[in-house]
Image (tube, rainbow, N blue to C red; front, side, top):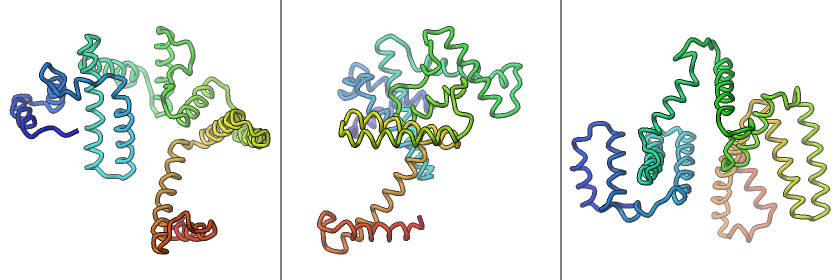
Length: 277
């Protein structure tokens, strides 16, 4: 959303006495939400900003994958803005402010790193994770959460959730000892998926497809592979190959829909060879 040159100059001049960049950002956000602030910013709610929070998070991930420091710097700024924006909304509602948000995470980091800020010993990363999980479990006993799965966000991507759910359960001993049982489960789910296809019930197919995806995610967890990352890599490969395919189709002077499937498959295989995969 663009700002007028007059407003930009006013903010820049008015912010000159604020030394710390983060404090400057908080003050700018406060002005944007103030009595004479920006009409668009004043209309926003926690709910209306959800889409921007998700979008900015994914753009940070894209910048990381692109290994572009300048892009990452900019996208991290956009993501921080979302945190500051939500904190300002909460302050306007007299619920909490950005300082309390930061205090909360600082306290949590100190509390969950007793090997740094206390006397607990943790020589390996595995020891750190073990201590972290134990501290989290103790915190949840003192709170309202009753299940070990409660900490997994229900709004997170489904594939991410499946990995986290099986991982949490595995830590409690609910898991196969090796991949043999998982592979057998996947085959079982494939057979059930085939049966659902024959019955042609969309609801049944959807349920069995979900079970199959969950089982594959569980197998990847056993292999130490993040399913979200594995699928992301495949998505990127598809994008690159499809772009080459589109260029080859364009050279034929025809639209993609006008070509036969075997012609498109030929272009696809050529694209795979050109990319070396």
